[in-house]
Every structure is written in C-alpha cells, then in structure tokens.
Length: 190
Image (cartoon, rainbow, N blue to C red; front, side, top):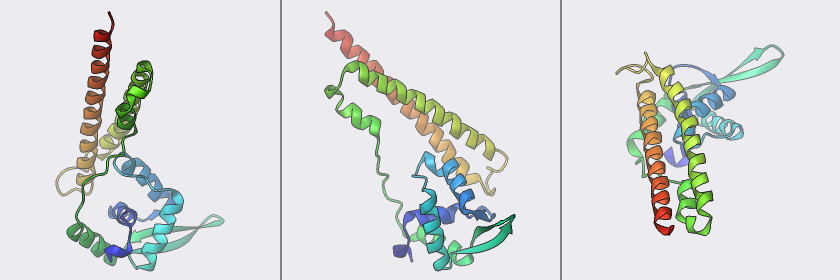
C-alpha cells in the first residue's frame, strides 16, 4: 500500500488520528497550524486530491451532510487507514531530512552581493524567526494539558518543543554569522 500513496497522504491520515471528523477546509487549517513548521503544508487542491485517493483506498470515510444551502463533507480515518498509517510508520524508513534553506543558499554565495545586503537578509531572517517562534509558541501553549504521556497531543507537543529548539538554534547560528561578518569587515577596515 505504501507505494500507492505519497507522504502527503500519510500526513493527512495522521492529521485525522486525533478522534475528530474534519472537512477538507479543517484539515487545511490543522495542516497550516502544525505541518508548516516542519513539512510543507499542502494546498487545498492537494488535500482534496489526497482525500479522494484515501477514500478510494478505503482509508478514510467521507460523510456528506447539509449545512444550510450547501453540502459539506467531513472525513474520518477508518480502521484500514489506521492500519495503513501504522504499517507505513513501522515499515518505511523516516529518511534523512532534505534541507532547503534559502537563507543558507544566499549566505553561501554572499560574496556575490554587497555585505550590507547580506546582513540585511540575516536581520530579516531573525525577524521571521521571531514570528515563527511566537506562532509555534502559541501552538505549544494550546497543547498544554493534553501533552502528558498517554494524552492524544503528547507527540504533537514533542514536535512543537523540537521546533522551538530548532528556531532557537537558527537564531543562534544567524547571530553568529552576523557577528562573523561584522568581525571580518572590521579587520578589512584600515
């Protein structure tokens, strides 16, 4: 089964394992709140494509209901979906993360730009890190009380803690790069 499904399908299955039925829109909201910090949050069109694929495989159940004048479909993971997710987790290596870091790419070729522009880029990145850390901090705070061992949000809380540590490390490395740039420019000045 794992060969038939992309990783995004398993991510969506995982988002449905917290005991609630969600619409495609609610899955997108949950993905934006959680996945965006460590994985690509899928587009709405991709979520609906994957939900159709998962329903075709019997891994999610689609329940349509009237909501005013429109029909709304909510999705729940099936027993087969739970099994497929557990099998994927048990039998598929996690793999090493692929780092696509645009700041590091630009820093790598920083010699091709003005030093002031490189510093500005790093300061902009620090501001983005602050915003991301605040957003993830809000997510982590929302998990308090449901993050003890055996609680449903124990593992998402661990991921949030990891992400907060990652952002702190990114800030530290960015500040070190800025200090190094400042030191090297100071040496070049007569």
